[in-house]
Amino acid sequence: MDKLAIEKNAINKLLWKYVNGIMLWRLIMAIINNDFHDVLTGRHSVRRFDPSVKISHEEMTEMLKETITAPSACNLQAWKFVVVDTDEGREKLHKYFMKFNFPQIDKSSAIVLFFGNTLAFKKYSKLWHSMYEAKKVTKEAMDAALNTFMPLYEKAPREMLVADSMVDTSLAAMQFMLIAREHGYDTNAMAGYDSTKAATTMGLDPKQYVPVMAIAIGKHDPKAEAEIATTRYPISDLVDFE
Amino acid sequence: MDKLAIEKNAINKLLWKYVNGIMLWRLIMAIINNDFHDVLTGRHSVRRFDPSVKISHEEMTEMLKETITAPSACNLQAWKFVVVDTDEGREKLHKYFMKFNFPQIDKSSAIVLFFGNTLAFKKYSKLWHSMYEAKKVTKEAMDAALNTFMPLYEKAPREMLVADSMVDTSLAAMQFMLIAREHGYDTNAMAGYDSTKAATTMGLDPKQYVPVMAIAIGKHDPKAEAEIATTRYPISDLVDFE
Image (tube, rainbow over all chains, first blue to last red; front, side):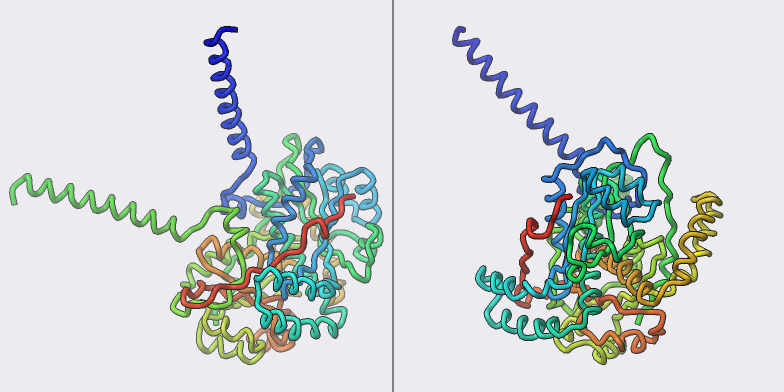
């Protein structure tokens, strides 16, 4: 090969890299929807999923990592996630979900079970120590947090721990549904199941973990009929100014 | 004035309109943040508010209207909002909030109280009839929803109604915190108050309305110290794949 041919070849390779770079960028931009208003107002429940759509564990983990930027009472982060995407896992859900949720369970890309962790306060002290060591908080702030809130949680009745973990976990669940749309997916939040069987069926301790909701995620089946667009009550019925 | 001067004047006016148009557009874009990723990951609790920042009732209503696009169990929409932005209103909050929340109560632009509505199912039948009349659902879908879910709610123990309304309302609360950022505001979700006094102090029936959280909204005081950036547990500790 003469010198000119080698140079031509190098230029061609460079051009290909450039073209591929642009194509990859376009592909990413086509998948990621960063328009807040569209993500928010375009979300509605989808129950008819395309079973051919798969979500990798890497992408699911990425979405859940964004999910836990949600706030929580005293930063307890009282949430726990079980991602079900195998036949065996879906079979377990058949044991305690109501039948009208079976189509979503069977055809969605995954079902993410959102559990509240009623014993999250037990790792709270370690968390604050790690924030102190990372110089994010002062020793005074750490001591104040641990001396003010820890005793409240240690003495709290179970109902309070359950309620707190349900609120935390619902905040995370809402973020997950919006993040799903950022990633181009649809969701359906489900509460139709026997909540007394949820933790044990999934191999979790029911004393520690309480089911808050399950979210089916995937893409709407283009061959299925359109989804119901539900109506909201007028906002004027719901707001008082004081 | 000669003809040329009149024409010059007309052009000047047109130019001013154009410049003002651009400035208004820039102002709107500076206020509205439509970047989903930034809205989501840039949110953190702010406790030191600038007391000079006011939020109009129009803008607050706009934000709450977006808030209620959140999903809810059976579309019950079991939420209720009380916006506190007067001295008299803030004084009421002093009666049942813990003292460490007083700075947010006194200096934020407003405090939005998120209550769960445990009797939301009572207007459910009317909602489905309105959806049927608007041709959003078929008569069969309406009958199925009303015959399946209504009896469950009518017979439900109070704990279930409370739990359901807390989950619904938390989903709305998370949307509100993100919408606040879209509008350029910061928030602080608060749960430190005597929940047995919340509804009655605000003139609501405590049998119907349960407090879920309160969210202070406004802008971080530029003269105050920086806010704590809290740490999250590693996602690998929180996710199981099944």
